[in-house]
Length: 438
Figure 1 (cartoon, helix red, strand yellow):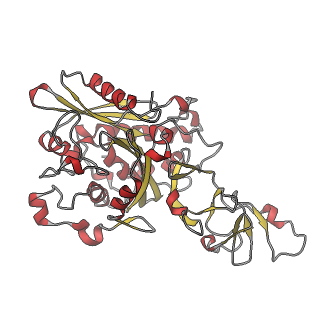
Figure 2: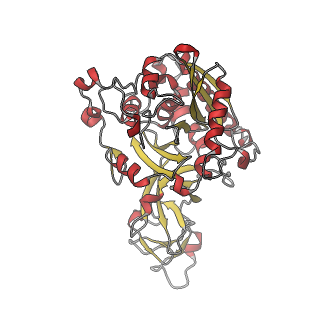
Figure 3: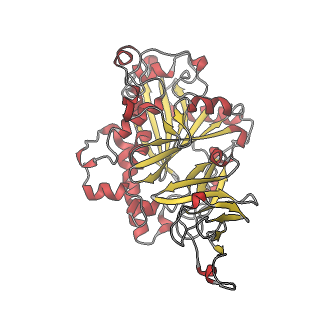
């Protein structure tokens, strides 16, 4: 259990809040590039509790500025996209992508008032299908040389989904290796040949055993957590019959992302991005180490479960997450279908908009959750003490040397799981058509 004060400190994200100020010192996914793929590339963005508008100007550059016009507060999402900026329809005030007002056509001739009018504005860049914003002080940090950023665009697919809960509980489900044996338990194994684009459908590495069977039959993983330059490395060991060990390596990328194996072919790097205190988006980058990603198929698979333009899941509290008692008896542990995103969504949303951690009781398998909260508390203290250089990936580290992170499944036949993980990762990288060397 933790105190209510501590829970508020770890979860609230508005300007000036403890966790919010930490998150603002890292690049945040703001939107999918797909969202601007329209005749009028202007979309609303709510990020860390701030109302913003993202647009592409006539020169092709991206801008992210305040959603409400500094004049009288009209909604700039309805602005006229013209003259290399965004013009408010209320009185014609015109803003460029930096948020600077460059014209006030209704003001007296020769007025220079516009020079003093500045809307909120944040730097934005696009990387492999996601538009990123930096909302903190000073110069934006570099991007680490993670696989999802260094792979060519052909080998990365990006998508997002809405969850109606606080960002921290959304993150914490991803650093909990034990839950997969229960929440994602399939009582019947599907054909791994039909696994493309789906998680937990492949065979366990170097075996003919479906990963769903491994998770189901060995529900008590031994979990090891190691601190790294980027966050935490989680190793879940499931000791199989015959002396073999299934090794699953996942990662927490501070402050709010995970990197996990999706299959032997792909990894998922996923950010949990606060809209406000009580809602978040997950942004996923699916990175392929073999063939180019079949983006149309993966998009179609996910649009079977989500609606546009808000990327809201079709299942939720409003329809009991598709729960079916007969299915729960014979097919899945949850009775909520085969999409594991729905399972995770139910778990984190059912906790409440902001989980009441004053009532929780953590166990030994929650070791990564405890370690992550300690890291977050340390980061909050560093920011309050004006020690940004003490933050992870902000310590003067050359981020171009930060590769990976290693995220895979392996089988250790002789008990040497460290060697098995390294060999599995090296084999995948050696065969990769793009430069995945580390």
